Image 1 (tube, rainbow, N blue to C red):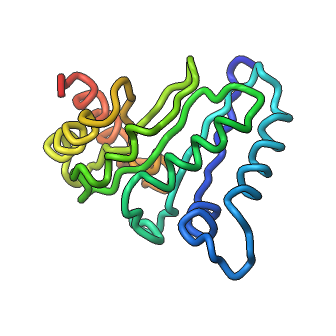
Image 2 (cartoon, rainbow, N blue to C red):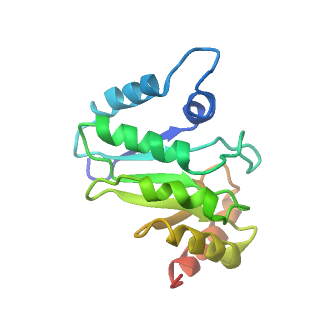
Length: 177
């Protein structure tokens, strides 16, 4: 089981409940957190668990654009207080056009468990190193010790785009921003 990892893709819940607490279904953030906790706590500790807080993706655009990291940070903090097992990583998206302090400021409130890695999805092929540098400079004012990733991972991309995206990750990882 050492080669197995499970990542919760928390997208529908983010856009339908967390960003819309007065949703028509009456589903609460606490109900979502309880459900994720109950499922996660059934996963053996030998299997690494990751959380991807997302806003959906259609044609490389979110279903709704987050105003900042506030909702994602609050939800991850809520889960951290409820889970009885470790979380190997948390991944949060950074829209291409967001390099402002207002977007990143809530990250200063992120509670991270020992051993848990944090990834910012700030790598975008469309604006390459220059865009990633702008986003990393803003992030660095509010959070330290994070990894980089594509905004919504590598999924839903044509296979021929992956080598360029991985090369860009390597170039950005070598920067001292």
